Length: 306
Image (cartoon, rainbow, N blue to C red; front, side):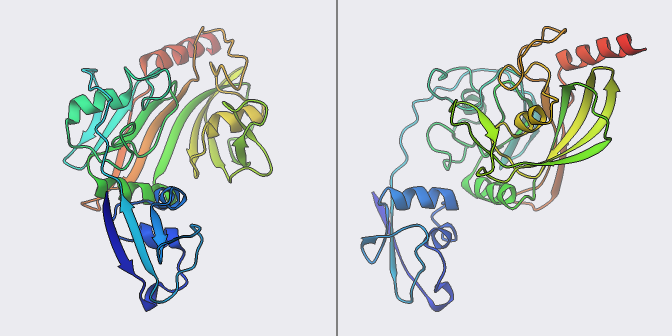
């Protein structure tokens, strides 16, 4: 196990331990630093401290860095719809039904399996052996744009952009019911459900969650929406829209799932991503067309409302 030692200087006094570690050259995000503090891999003067510990002058911070584990996730030759790629990042239009990274019960056929095959050994290791290169997630049945980092520098930079709300994420959603307002903002905190740990819900003690909706078109009992999110809480759009009485069509968790189109899984697509390239600093604007099944449903709605 590698060890790195840092002495606290005047400019670092009163800084939080986790913030200090995230600013160093050890390629830790703040959340990763917090995890390593709890695991006892980050010490101050050879003692365990909380991640909120305020540094003092001449404190010695010791960081134990575990060697990367050899991945047990196998590359698979799965076709990827690549929207953009260079030496540092890969942006993929993820298909509906594809799980992003391996987890219990899903160790094959994931986006990670496909990306490992495509990128070989050029992926950031920050996400660990299960999530190499994965900076952010999309639900299994949410299609559309997702960024994959090919190096740690790109991973850290994009993670910070997301944390600081500098990545624009815009989705297209077909929801049940006719939304009368042309635009609206949903600002409701979201937390994990106490009744069902697999579900999220609006709750006063949850984390801040903000979604901006704009009507694209109304189809009688259905509304096509553009949704921009300021925060990226788990299931955020689905929870917010269900809470206001307009669940996403096909959502089998936050709606009854039944719909006249026989669609299984939410009709939610990550359409637009805007962010600053982590290396070149060029502002990127990327778009992904709606999947064919989504277009087919809209064509049926067009025909029925004309």
